[in-house]
Image (cartoon, rainbow over all chains, first blue to last red; front, side, top):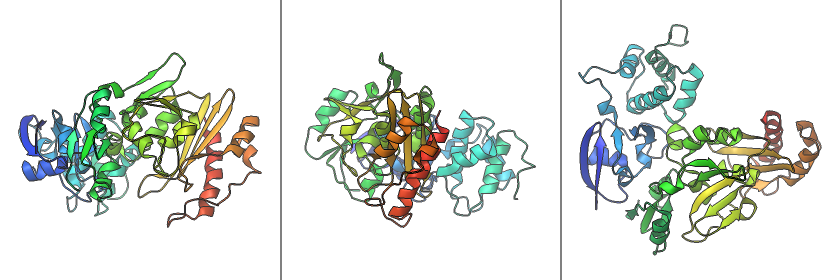
Length: 161
Length: 262
């Protein structure tokens, strides 16, 4: 076992991990931060997307030991300081961007990474960016709409409720 | 996964030392190796993570005008930082998905030499030099067939040097489930001729289509390919495409790359 320390949603955390402990398992099993989901465990689905040093990564395909010293952000840290939903989360609620909700943590974290680099993406850019996030309910239209709305764009013309 | 230790050297010298032990394996971004470990297709005793080797990260131009990319540079960094070689930046920006591109590295991709990976086509197509901790290897001597390279045990891809073509383009026919290339063709036009590298198609991994290189060196247009055919012998057969289909795609994608080359 090796000790790892990182900053999780602004707070210092530490734990003992094996070499093979995945970042997502460290988050979920050791820290009990279960907002980050494991959908496929094969880096296809994106339910486990978190930010490491500001970049979206699949936490099922990175070892916890590799995040030593990193700034890690998960869905638990996404809300506003007063506990209200952030603009992306609120847009997902307003535009029915989730059905079962399993993919939602990864969708929201991917959307946040997209909007950080590209504050006003086109619909095509949103769809392309979400290539690695799979919604098993196939609710993509409203997810895309929510992200467009979160970027402050008019979404009334986007098809398919 | 079977149990292993992770070492995290911060210099190439320390990484080489760590890899000199028994049953060691270099870990780049892990986007192929970690799924492989999960399936227990690899069982190293020690993984040597290269992501903390800062001297292997970054993009620059050398005095010869080559674009030099550190082996631990991520696909996302190449997509953002290789603007002087637009075909290479575009290739990097279509590997996997955004989260994969934030971890996966050029050195890892070239060391793995997946027969459907994109970077081998760029390296062979542009005639890159693969620099390791011990030597420089020309791309023409580096790729030795599916998942096989000229690298020795414990040898690390520290840098890749790309001559920058006059114009180039990479066309990828995406296998939508894996996002690897069903067939990918990299076309690079230099002052002294055209090079073409094909990935995803052959059971021998990435290869140069020399017939088309000769035709395009004489006349850089898609029409110059019209009399050429690609033999289906030795092409990959799987549920996504037959050898004949892949052979057909090689010509189609080459023509598209010529038309789109900038």
